[in-house]
Structures are given as structure tokens and as C-alpha cells.
Length: 143
Length: 428
Ligand SMILES: [Zn+2]
Image (cartoon, rainbow over all chains, first blue to last red; front, side):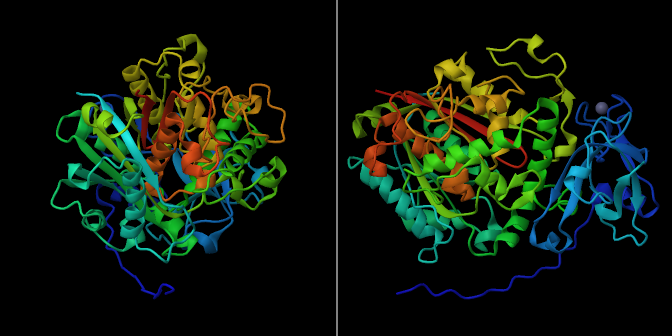
């Protein structure tokens, strides 16, 4: 016989804690971009982590510059279901002077992917009403 | 550790959807296929099994592994589930190898499956994207194709790789799959077809990206004594390697390249590694497996490769990780024709065609990517190549390589977060 297929709705409200990463999100709602730095190794993370991967010690919160450069980028014309309504959007990995790692963010402003160049200067902007999400910060061309 | 052999393998047909079968039934199909190929192997001789599947979200069934085990009639023997994103199948293959190598088992079954058709494609993409950091990555991008597109844009920037070179990988793998009856997509394409298909995440188009599938695969592994009792043509597993890397792409450091035996420090004077353009986990896995198998010049000593081409770009990046060519030369490597099959007409001029065929089966791009089955599917296709039994299993020998004594399989997760490399050789 032909298989019987039924629909099964599946909805969950997660109580997601940012845990030790919470200060980063609090920072965004105060228009501050926070990374972390190891006091022993000086290694600095743009995407914060409270434990140093080099020496295992605890890192300190530091404020990142609010201007950086496009390390790489893409334009997403599709996405996971949650983000489909936002497409197309540009993703960038941001590099900052004096910081060892990168930050994933959205780039607003350019129309087409051809308008984005690796190495172009970009600056941080913050959403007026914080949603306590990493998209509370986004970048725009700096010049 | 004692020597370990693969004695048989089986795959279910990979398809967009298999509403006619639950995952247990699909696993059973691949298991029965493998069992029928070694009639001397009695069910009672299997000492245990390892289960490979990636996502509980897709099945909406926890402890699915044991449900497949009981369907196969392998209770009350040992079993465990292995999970490591896209590399789940490769990790499972190696877990079965460990069970036999350690002496715990004489015969171990590695089986894997994924049922991805139970949710719409974009929900599926969301489920897969949950395999990225949900504090910092998922809420910003929520899309693996976007992450890979960022990696390849940097690769193009650093090394001059072109979108046409990416497209050549898609043409190759779809064309190879033309003769593989288990493949989901068997299409003759041109570079223009790939570039003109729908843009998904710039510069990756729909034909640069593998598709979701339902499917299952099984590998049967045995110790030396048992292997030669069961078959005259066992395939020896001579090298295994596993590498890891940070989950977040943004955290990849900028250090020095881990050198392969055929490379010098001066080759990479100005390269910051792995950056976002290379997979350190892939290189680590490859170097371990090469060392164990005694491979010092992979291009010369390996006859073919089945690698994890979830994206055309990641196939090119992986040539470099596996030291088939130098970092940065992956685009030129495909353009020259090195990874193409010698006997197939691709409608392109390829001076080095057939040097080291990559993805003779069609890879993930054309066969499909039912995650938990994928790494095991590669082992099955590689096993048949080395045995010289492609004609028997595909019904047509066009895809059989003349020289297939030593093959490499490669399984890859996340943005290169887990990678496994296993080397298989003619054992008789
Ligand atoms: Zn430190």
C-alpha cells in the first residue's frame, strides 16, 4: 500500500541562557563591542570566550574598536527557515586592528555582493531597541 | 593494535524522500545488501555494531540507533551511537575499526542513516545550522552555505581561485554519478549550467551545493583471520586519522602550516594558516592517516579519493588539506584535470585527466548527503573500487578504475570542525 504520511507540529520555547557570554550581549545594548583578552598571553578574541585556548587561564573583558575591515563576506539569498524573510542579507567576518580573531556580523548598505570588497573599512552600528541577540550590532561601510 | 579489514558493504538508494520506509528499514536494506555479498558471514558471527546518525531533530526520535540494532536482530550485542556532524559516518567507520583493532570484536557492523525529508528544505537548513554556535553564529547567519561562501570568497581573494574552477568540480561529480545507480542526481552539466543556476550564497549556486537525502549505508569490518575466511578480496584499513577545529569560523587562528612530508616550510612563507580558507582538521587527519599508512607522497601513492564535497569549494580546499597539491593551488589542480576520471568524457580539455580521480562515485554533490550514512557510503564505494567489483554492484563497469589499489576516504563536519581520513588498500 502507499505509505501513510501525517503532520506532527513541533514547537518549543527554549529558555536559552547566554551564560558566561552574557556581558557581550549586555555590552551591545550599551553600544559597546566587547571582546576578551588573556592577561598572560595577550591573545585577544573578537568573538569573546572567557577561557584562554592557549594557556587555559581566565580572560578579561576588553572593549573592541568600533571600526574594522571586511575579512570576507557573502550574500545569502536563502537561509534557514527562521531567516528566510530577511534574505537577501550580507554576512561579513570583521577584522579589527590589534585583535587576533574575527567577528561574524551582518553588513548593511551595499546592494549587491559586487559592491563589497575584502579589506573595505566598515563601522559598527547598534540597533536602537536591543533584542539581546548578536544582531544587535551590525556594520555599515565607513567611508 | 591488530590489522582490520573491510569485508563487505551496502548502501540503500539515496533519494530526496523515502516515505515507503522508516530509518530501520533503510538500514536493513543496506545491511542485507552487505550480508548477501559475504554469504559465509553468519549473523551470529557479528560481535557488535556502531550506529551513525547526526540529528535527533530530523527523526524526532531519540535512541534511534538501538531501534535500528533491534530491527537488524543484533541485540543483546554491544552497540553505541557516534555523532560528529557531517563527519558522523567517518567517525563511525573509525569506531568500528577501533572495536576490531583493539581485539574487542572480531566482526563489527558500522551502519548509518539520515532521514532528512520529514521537514521542508529550509527547516532542514535551520536544523543543520544549529550545528554552529547558537550564541554567536546561528542567530547572525543561520545558514551553512553562507559560512562556506565566506570561506571560498577568502580563498579566491588569497589565491585567485575562480568560480569556473568551482563549477568544474560540480560538472565532474555530477558526470561521474551518471553511472552510479545509487546516486540521487545523475546529470550531464556544463560550467555555464552551474553558474547560471540559482544563486544561494554568493558565489555558490544551487549546483555548487549538495542536497539533502534519505538513505543508509553499512560497512562490515573484521579481523585478519575472519576476513580471509569470509572473502578472497578483503580490503585492509591501513591508516586512520581524525582532526578537530574550533566550532566558530571566526576563531580560526593565523599561524603556520602543518607540513606534509612532500612540503617545505618555504612553500608557505606568507600564508597565515588555517585562516578561514583552509581546514586545519582536514590536514591533521590526513597527516595522521598518511603516517600510519606510510604515505609520503599522496599524489603518487594514492590511486583515488572519495572526499566530502558538500560544496564544490570544500572539495578544492580539501585537495590542499590532503596535500594532493600545495595550499592555494586547488583551483589550478582541478582546472588541469588531475581529479577527473580518465575514462569519462567531460566535454572539456583536461591535460592531466586521470592523475588522481576524486569522487569517482559522484560524491555528496551528486549522490546526496544523508548525513549519518555519507561517510560510510564513501567507504562502500571505495571498497568496491579496490575490490574491482564496481560492475557487479553498479550493473555497469564504466566507473571502475583500472588502478585502484589504495584509496582515501574523507569525512567532514561543520566548517571543518571534525574531519576524518581513512586509507583503504587491496588486502589480498
Ligand atoms: Zn592565555
